Image (cartoon, rainbow, N blue to C red):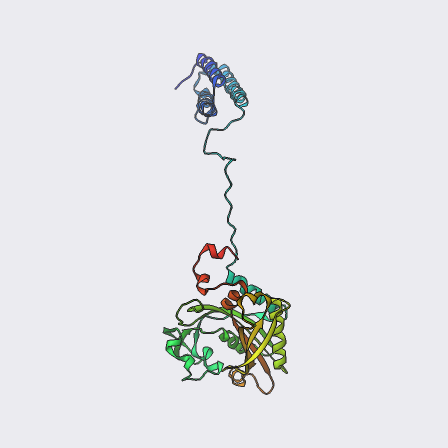
Length: 342
């Protein structure tokens, strides 16, 4: 569409009046788009200068620039008059309560693992990991659990339908590990003494799920092997852990027990102020003992030269005791009412 000089004068008068009469931010924005937008009137006239006859082009271009400038001034004045208002929208109602932004945090089991591992890190135990799918050699044989032992029963383990290669490449049964002691075996296979490690991880046993049992739970096991270690060293380490984690006033006692991978073996009971509401003088928290010579032989260590101690605890049990949680199923229910408490 071609414009004449008379058109420019008319558009200037109309536009100036329209901006002056604008009564709302919405109306002002609509006028801005019409007169000053990328496809508005002012831009169209400026773009049409090239189509004007040469002898009129200078006067027309001057008038087009003046139109654009004066319309922008009229728009600025109208904007200032309307208080620099923006088009109405949903906006923010400052009288309403705000929405709290949720900040994530570690699961209570992860928190407990980190607290325990950090304590042992401070006394020289390095954190190690291992596979959750294991062979019988690492899950049983190397831990002094021979064929025919009740712990190897198919009803007490999650055996898999697939097999894996042994050291000679022959297929052997695989299972989900039933204890994190397998990590200790793999660590000793790869390192020579002195060894001092702490091994957290998931373990699997086909237990019936109830308030205190689950088919998947977490363990933390510790191992130390070097020349001259004694049961007294084991006791000292565990006493330090108990007081660090359960409080300086916590007391510990050892009871004789049996584990195939340790000899001498014991269970650890504690008495602490935080358990006074349970009305039980002593609570069992973990098992421990001196590493059995057969275990040392299985990984190539000389039991005449080296001794070691090991201990293991269930993370869920520790968390339940410390925080007064009555049911292990809370840990896997994904109930935010429970998780937000920790």
